[in-house]
Amino acid sequence: MVPSDYFKKLPKEELFTEIDKPLEIDLGCGDGSFLVAMALKYPEKNFLGVERLLGRVRKVLRKSEENSLSNLKVLRLELSYTIEWLLPDHCASRIHLLFPDPWPKKKHHKRRLINESFCEALVKILNQDGEFLFKTDHEEYFEESMNTLQNFSLLDHIPWDNEDYYPVTDFERIWTNEGKEIFTARYKVKAQGA
Image 1 (spheres, rainbow, N blue to C red):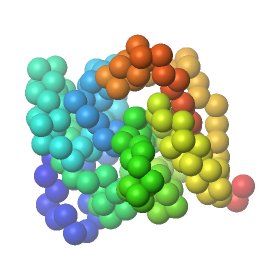
Image 2: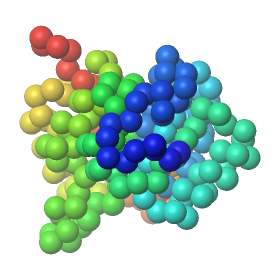
Image 3: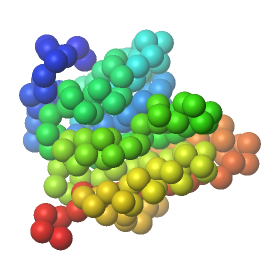
Protein backbone atom coordinates (compact mmCIF):
# COMPACT_ATOMS: atom_id res chain seq x y z
CA MET A 1 0.00 0.00 0.00
CA VAL A 2 1.32 3.41 -0.97
CA PRO A 3 -0.62 6.38 0.47
CA SER A 4 -1.57 9.16 -1.93
CA ASP A 5 -0.26 11.68 0.61
CA TYR A 6 2.05 10.88 3.52
CA PHE A 7 1.38 14.25 5.16
CA LYS A 8 -2.33 14.07 5.93
CA LYS A 9 -4.76 11.58 7.42
CA LEU A 10 -5.69 8.85 4.98
CA PRO A 11 -9.33 8.53 4.01
CA LYS A 12 -10.75 5.17 5.17
CA GLU A 13 -11.53 4.12 1.60
CA GLU A 14 -7.86 4.48 0.71
CA LEU A 15 -7.02 1.75 3.23
CA PHE A 16 -9.63 -0.65 1.84
CA THR A 17 -12.50 0.03 -0.54
CA GLU A 18 -14.86 -2.18 1.51
CA ILE A 19 -14.95 0.18 4.50
CA ASP A 20 -17.84 -1.72 6.14
CA LYS A 21 -15.51 -4.66 6.92
CA PRO A 22 -13.78 -4.55 10.32
CA LEU A 23 -10.11 -3.56 10.05
CA GLU A 24 -7.34 -5.06 12.19
CA ILE A 25 -3.88 -3.51 12.23
CA ASP A 26 -0.65 -5.37 13.02
CA LEU A 27 2.01 -2.86 14.10
CA GLY A 28 5.46 -4.19 13.27
CA CYS A 29 4.11 -7.15 11.32
CA GLY A 30 7.55 -8.69 10.72
CA ASP A 31 7.48 -11.46 8.11
CA GLY A 32 3.67 -11.49 8.14
CA SER A 33 3.12 -14.97 9.59
CA PHE A 34 0.56 -13.73 12.13
CA LEU A 35 -1.05 -11.32 9.67
CA VAL A 36 -1.43 -13.87 6.88
CA ALA A 37 -2.84 -16.50 9.25
CA MET A 38 -5.42 -13.99 10.51
CA ALA A 39 -6.37 -12.88 6.98
CA LEU A 40 -6.86 -16.51 5.94
CA LYS A 41 -8.96 -17.33 9.02
CA TYR A 42 -11.13 -14.20 8.81
CA PRO A 43 -11.87 -13.35 5.15
CA GLU A 44 -14.75 -11.15 6.36
CA LYS A 45 -12.20 -8.73 7.88
CA ASN A 46 -9.48 -6.51 6.42
CA PHE A 47 -5.91 -6.58 7.74
CA LEU A 48 -3.21 -3.93 7.50
CA GLY A 49 0.37 -4.68 8.43
CA VAL A 50 2.73 -1.82 9.21
CA GLU A 51 6.45 -2.56 8.93
CA ARG A 52 9.49 -0.34 8.47
CA LEU A 53 11.96 -2.89 7.08
CA LEU A 54 11.78 -3.51 3.32
CA GLY A 55 12.89 -7.16 3.47
CA ARG A 56 10.08 -7.98 5.88
CA VAL A 57 7.53 -6.07 3.78
CA ARG A 58 8.55 -8.12 0.74
CA LYS A 59 8.04 -11.37 2.72
CA VAL A 60 4.53 -10.28 3.74
CA LEU A 61 3.67 -9.39 0.15
CA ARG A 62 5.01 -12.72 -1.13
CA LYS A 63 2.95 -14.68 1.42
CA SER A 64 -0.13 -12.61 0.66
CA GLU A 65 0.23 -13.21 -3.08
CA GLU A 66 0.86 -16.95 -2.57
CA ASN A 67 -2.44 -17.13 -0.67
CA SER A 68 -4.34 -14.78 -3.03
CA LEU A 69 -5.38 -12.55 -0.15
CA SER A 70 -7.44 -9.54 -1.15
CA ASN A 71 -8.11 -8.59 2.49
CA LEU A 72 -4.47 -7.89 3.40
CA LYS A 73 -2.28 -4.86 2.71
CA VAL A 74 1.08 -3.82 4.07
CA LEU A 75 2.38 -0.31 4.61
CA ARG A 76 6.13 0.34 4.78
CA LEU A 77 6.44 3.14 7.29
CA GLU A 78 7.62 3.97 10.81
CA LEU A 79 5.06 2.85 13.41
CA SER A 80 4.69 5.93 15.58
CA TYR A 81 4.28 8.24 12.56
CA THR A 82 1.69 5.89 11.08
CA ILE A 83 -0.51 5.75 14.16
CA GLU A 84 -0.09 9.34 15.29
CA TRP A 85 -0.42 11.12 11.93
CA LEU A 86 -1.49 8.91 9.01
CA LEU A 87 -4.25 6.46 9.99
CA PRO A 88 -7.80 7.84 9.93
CA ASP A 89 -9.82 8.26 13.11
CA HIS A 90 -12.01 5.35 14.20
CA CYS A 91 -10.84 3.07 11.40
CA ALA A 92 -9.81 -0.08 13.32
CA SER A 93 -11.57 -2.71 15.40
CA ARG A 94 -8.29 -4.11 16.74
CA ILE A 95 -4.64 -3.09 16.90
CA HIS A 96 -2.01 -5.76 17.58
CA LEU A 97 1.48 -5.00 18.92
CA LEU A 98 3.31 -8.30 19.15
CA PHE A 99 6.88 -8.53 20.42
CA PRO A 100 8.03 -5.02 19.59
CA ASP A 101 11.68 -4.11 20.08
CA PRO A 102 11.99 -3.54 23.87
CA TRP A 103 15.01 -1.26 23.47
CA PRO A 104 16.57 -2.78 26.61
CA LYS A 105 19.40 -0.26 27.07
CA LYS A 106 18.36 2.61 29.35
CA LYS A 107 19.61 5.24 26.88
CA HIS A 108 17.24 3.77 24.24
CA HIS A 109 14.09 3.63 26.40
CA LYS A 110 12.83 6.83 24.74
CA ARG A 111 12.46 4.78 21.53
CA ARG A 112 9.90 2.45 23.10
CA LEU A 113 6.56 2.66 21.36
CA ILE A 114 4.11 2.57 24.27
CA ASN A 115 3.85 6.02 25.83
CA GLU A 116 1.09 8.58 26.38
CA SER A 117 1.17 9.81 22.75
CA PHE A 118 0.80 6.21 21.58
CA CYS A 119 -2.22 5.71 23.87
CA GLU A 120 -3.83 8.91 22.60
CA ALA A 121 -3.34 7.72 19.01
CA LEU A 122 -4.80 4.29 19.85
CA VAL A 123 -8.01 5.85 21.14
CA LYS A 124 -8.32 8.02 18.01
CA ILE A 125 -7.71 5.14 15.58
CA LEU A 126 -9.82 2.48 17.31
CA ASN A 127 -13.59 2.26 16.95
CA GLN A 128 -15.64 2.94 20.06
CA ASP A 129 -15.48 -0.73 21.10
CA GLY A 130 -12.00 -1.29 19.63
CA GLU A 131 -9.26 -3.33 21.29
CA PHE A 132 -5.50 -3.14 21.70
CA LEU A 133 -3.63 -6.45 22.13
CA PHE A 134 -0.01 -6.52 23.28
CA LYS A 135 2.52 -9.33 23.78
CA THR A 136 6.17 -9.28 24.79
CA ASP A 137 8.78 -11.53 26.36
CA HIS A 138 10.54 -8.58 28.03
CA GLU A 139 9.26 -8.26 31.62
CA GLU A 140 10.66 -4.81 32.39
CA TYR A 141 9.22 -3.38 29.15
CA PHE A 142 5.90 -5.05 29.90
CA GLU A 143 5.76 -3.52 33.40
CA GLU A 144 6.60 -0.05 32.08
CA SER A 145 3.99 -0.43 29.32
CA MET A 146 1.34 -1.63 31.77
CA ASN A 147 1.99 1.38 33.99
CA THR A 148 1.45 3.68 31.01
CA LEU A 149 -1.66 1.83 29.78
CA GLN A 150 -3.26 1.55 33.22
CA ASN A 151 -2.77 5.24 33.89
CA PHE A 152 -4.39 6.22 30.61
CA SER A 153 -7.99 7.01 31.50
CA LEU A 154 -9.56 6.25 28.10
CA LEU A 155 -8.54 2.56 28.04
CA ASP A 156 -9.93 -0.31 30.14
CA HIS A 157 -7.89 -3.42 30.91
CA ILE A 158 -9.85 -6.54 29.95
CA PRO A 159 -9.02 -10.26 30.23
CA TRP A 160 -7.24 -11.93 27.32
CA ASP A 161 -9.77 -14.41 25.93
CA ASN A 162 -7.91 -17.56 24.91
CA GLU A 163 -10.98 -18.84 23.07
CA ASP A 164 -10.28 -16.53 20.12
CA TYR A 165 -8.10 -17.80 17.30
CA TYR A 166 -4.75 -16.09 17.76
CA PRO A 167 -1.78 -17.43 15.78
CA VAL A 168 1.64 -17.69 17.37
CA THR A 169 4.23 -15.34 15.90
CA ASP A 170 7.74 -16.44 14.95
CA PHE A 171 9.16 -14.45 17.87
CA GLU A 172 6.67 -16.02 20.28
CA ARG A 173 7.65 -19.49 19.08
CA ILE A 174 11.37 -18.70 19.54
CA TRP A 175 10.95 -17.22 23.04
CA THR A 176 8.61 -20.02 24.18
CA ASN A 177 11.07 -22.66 22.96
CA GLU A 178 13.77 -20.88 24.99
CA GLY A 179 11.56 -21.14 28.08
CA LYS A 180 10.83 -17.42 28.32
CA GLU A 181 7.58 -16.23 29.85
CA ILE A 182 5.21 -14.40 27.51
CA PHE A 183 3.44 -11.36 28.93
CA THR A 184 0.09 -10.34 27.47
CA ALA A 185 -2.28 -7.42 27.86
CA ARG A 186 -5.59 -6.54 26.28
CA TYR A 187 -7.28 -3.15 26.47
CA LYS A 188 -10.56 -1.81 25.20
CA VAL A 189 -11.52 1.77 24.45
CA LYS A 190 -13.52 2.99 27.43
CA ALA A 191 -17.19 3.58 26.70
CA GLN A 192 -17.99 7.29 26.45
CA GLY A 193 -19.46 8.61 29.67
CA ALA A 194 -17.95 5.75 31.71
